[in-house]
Length: 417
Image (cartoon, rainbow, N blue to C red; front, side, top):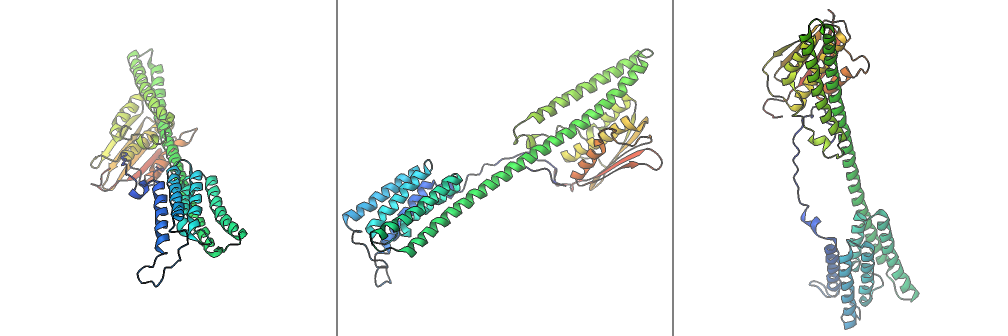
């Protein structure tokens, strides 16, 4: 999962369907190599008999082929192939050695000057599997061993002053190189895909933790602002109006407990080390939304800054990410009013339109509307709106005070969340 794309920030429950691999991929490698060997044997015999439409066999059978000793060579080679097929998943290089030995033994009774391609098909298949599944060094050793056997066979025949089929052997060597290159490409593609998955997962974890850090900033900044106001009010009236001071201290305790509980939840998510859990299972449904705006307004009003909320349009359920972001924008804007505006009131307007949600928070104070030290308040709001492909503005009002406005596009009615 990558970081949410603009306009695609809605989150859905993770549904995992386990699809079995295709039938061909479930066939063990040893079955393929055995099948290749059997196909090569069948082809070897077919080209040495006169087929329909031919006046003579394509290749003249060697003197030993149909004798008991020639057939014994073929049976022995087939036994080596079966053993090599069984060892291929666990001991790939030993398996390849058995296949190469079998190809040489099976060539002896054929009376040819090179190892034919039909006797090398199983070796080519083995080279592909080794190059695609084993380590790079193992694949290189396997390819070098196959080419060495081909060259060695020709060298021995030359030293014995026998005829050799150099051109045909070069063609067989080319098939071996091609089989290795195809397997090597498959392994590289798989490694690249895994790298992309790991990188995407790491980016998703980073994006999720940044989201959680934004939640921490918004929650703590607002709570500390409320606590500071309530503490100041309690200090002023603790001797003259102890009941009001007790109420303010009770509100401080409530806000502090709620903030501590939220911090524990979010820090627990930040400590999560499983990449597959953090980005996808962090629920947005449990996060605050526009339904909590009235409670936010009441808490802020009790702290000494009156918040008047106006609801326009028909209120309706929103996608979780839009609902939460709208609440956080209002919370951050109200927090800035409390901390920096120097005014006793502000107005929040939430307008549900057909295709968008508009938010406006205005005050008539003398502050600049930004978080004095970090400057993250307006930046965080702008980032939230940008991720949802909306529009954001924050600027002083000509008549005095500050205005924060956001427009969040809404999905068409009936498309779901």
